[in-house]
Length: 496
Ligand code: GBH
Image (cartoon, rainbow, N blue to C red; front, top):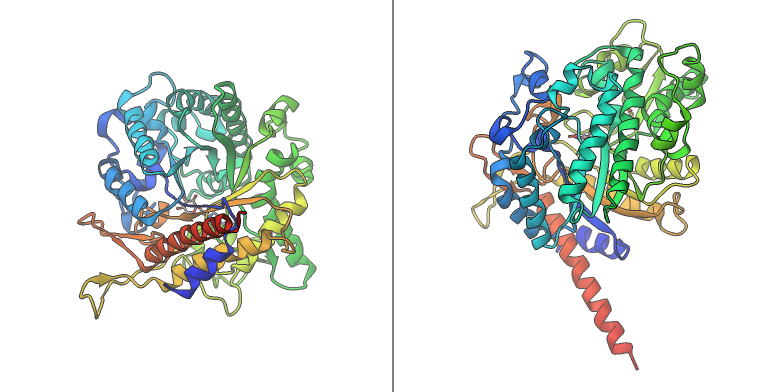
């Protein structure tokens, strides 16, 4: 057994949940099967140039047809929980109106199979795949979409409420607003820049209405939201860099977390929109948005280094694509730009690998939000191009993804140490970590070129091959089980 897996197993607190995550649009394929309705992403992904090399999500991992095989691979992995998302358009093809029984049936089978294998289901209601008729009516620019999500939550609660252990209402509204509505990099492909602000409020309202619907249905599972969090790091002591980092912090972090956890938008947003009648949230809305949650989901991938001024256009590879030119510094006249961290290893996306900033993220959350609910890190992971090699001993193919393995090991260890007594974020009640992702999949505008999986997927043959990181996590989970068993027998031996 690797030292890394054994040492980390010894660190895991009792009851800590280790899981893997995916989302429906990224893995299922079968976009027209069994009555599924189209989504905004179906249309966006077909636009020439929208996706790297015009890759198509039509088949992806073919998970809709291979779900039992994928659950079997999770069982062999030994994980506690699987975070997946419900395809709204499979279940309610029009985004409102009639329910499609075949859509419900797919998730019924998935959830039952998970439970039969001892894997606890965590279901996300909205992971970006808006039913097309709603996008055509304005998507998240339209307040009505929030009510439709509330209605979808009622449908999901009635169908799966008895079996889902944890509910995530909305995944990363910040990314939908920034990439989908401000920069045009994701569906629905709008480039509204600051005019995208209503999409923030409407998604958060959708979250609030979904919480209300799940509570009204008295689901026994825990309820939360997932926000992405990236600590903003000024590039130098220049006060303008600090101001720029502060602006990014408001736009990417606080704009989405403050309303949920403090019941109000950041002051600078309220000041900036004081004269705009289109953004004047009522106290009823704010109460819905800030209802108490059972947990708060945090997606952590990396910190962001911010410098004032337009920059020189030297952006780490992949970063411009992930962030949009307007924020990356290639746009002339941009007020600030994202700068690379010096001497820092990067992932396939160009994202800096900085596990220590996960500790910073958790400490900042604790400091900003005194009533922080228990936290799950609902996503973390790294894309690297993997190369299969022949195992010299066994002659079979292996995928030595040591960099991904190290990313996961370092981040999980950092999160646990930071929240242990004496750690930088010791007041945070950290309950678990979910690896993004179970398998290589359709990485939004990155197509199939940014593999995040523990399982390699050959998109021609659909063969799944466990990578070294999969075997490492398997070892970690079995080391934990053995440690718990020997602790229990030691307790027993000590009994009088
Ligand atoms: C997640 O998005 C998604 O939930 C998941 O579907 C996706 O596959 C996965 O991660 C990997 O991309 O604060 O301005 O620096 C994360 C996408 C990209 C969102 C970088 C935050 C930084 C914006 N993240 N972005 S900024």
